[in-house]
Amino acid sequence: MRVAVDQERCCGTGNCVMIAPEVFDQRDSDGVVVLRQPQPPPAHTAQARRAAANCPCAAIKVDED
Amino acid sequence: MSRTDNRVSDAQSVPLTYQRAPDCPFDPAPEIVRRRAEDPIARFLLPSGDSAWLVTRHADVRAVLSDPRFSSVPPPDSLLRPPDPDGPADAPPIPPGMFVGMDPPGHTRLRRMVTGEFTVKRMDRLRPRIEHIVAEHLDAMARAGGPVDLMKVFALPIPSLVICELLGVPYRDRDDFQRRSRMAVEVDVRHEDGMANFMEMHEYMAGLVAAQRADPGDDLLGMLVREHGDDITDEELIGLTNMLLSAGHETTANVLAIGTLLLIRHPDQAAVIRERPEVVEHAVEEMLRYLSVVPSTLVRTALADVTIDGTTIPAGEHVMVSLQSANRDGARYPDADRFDLAHDPELHVAFGHGIHHCLGRPLARMELQVAFPALLRRFPTLRLAVPFEDIQFRPNAAAYSLESLPVTW
Image 1 (cartoon, rainbow over the protein chains, first blue to last red):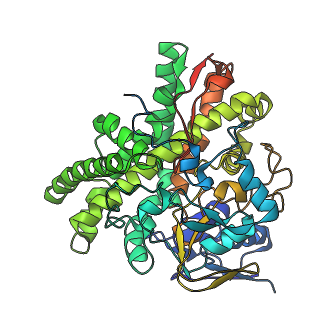
Image 2: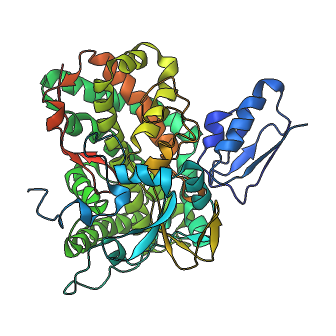
Image 3: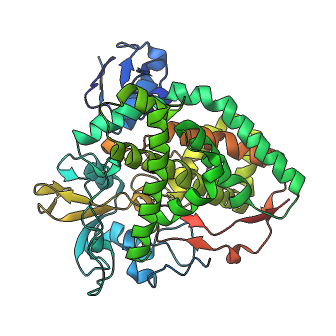
């Protein structure tokens, strides 16, 4: 799985961090998403998928490979 | 003061989106339910006599809220009020700083200035303080003995104190700002009362902003002055802080109060929350879905012809979405009208959707996840001190609420 984030679209609600803290983080200054694991290990792929679905601003893309 | 003093008139004077079922205060109005089945995207009549589109299905509500072709700049407030030929002119447009009623790029600029204060990490660091505040209020309840008004001793003070500390608003001023916030979210107050209330809020916050400009504190207002002071006007600071102050306590207080009432009505679910801390996170989300304390968002306006699920909303027309209807949509949530911790509340829209999705969700979630299990464990025999039928709900507001919640144990 490959994860990509769009920091321009991000609205900083932190939904992704609440769901998949191993994969996503937030910048301290403005809450914008930071990708911790562009290729999450199998143990975290389900949460990464949920985080993408739950992003209110569609700022997370998940490509299954 | 009687709360009825400033009411306009009956339920028909408020838009359908704010109405609840007459027989079950937790449920959406039957007309909303009918529309979701038969006319999911259709015009409806507003109290002013104008029409707007009402969107009721989960997928469609999300589609509208995430579509940049809908503006969030509110139309004149007369749209939502009954016509009054002798009435005053419209309220001024959305005050500077209240970015919930702005579009990008102005919205993005202001929202990003404060988002760092509400990150999940920041809220995690706040947890011990919230636990302490909750414990203090439970101690005070125990000392006072039942019956108490849970709204007054628990639901309202906890989020109020938390947001005061976060923003830099003196908690001693709570009686006034709680009253003003409550009125500010109501949709059936007389126009002149609403305007006077707004001016009071503005004047109060202007004083705090002036003090922070002179001597910025170690809180959100102080941070804004220190880090963005040259990029933000006093008027914007006033509007933004008032928005966060109201949104930060009025909504959470009502989830705490109405949620407690819901748990009292569902002792089996309450027992699960009391005994199994690992379900609390999920339980709070199911409660948020089921209650939809914020029934709708600000009115949207189509900037172009927009087709949603085969229905075209013409440019210039207004749209309201029903968050509570979306959260009860059986196409998304089987058995949606039941509150059940076994449900999967994933993708509920209780915090909205799109770029205006609630900024304070991590804070609200933390407060609710701490407060409910602590309350249930401290008072396992918590029950209503009056018959359920006597509980007075306050619909007709941007946040559904209770007059009071008398409980004992």
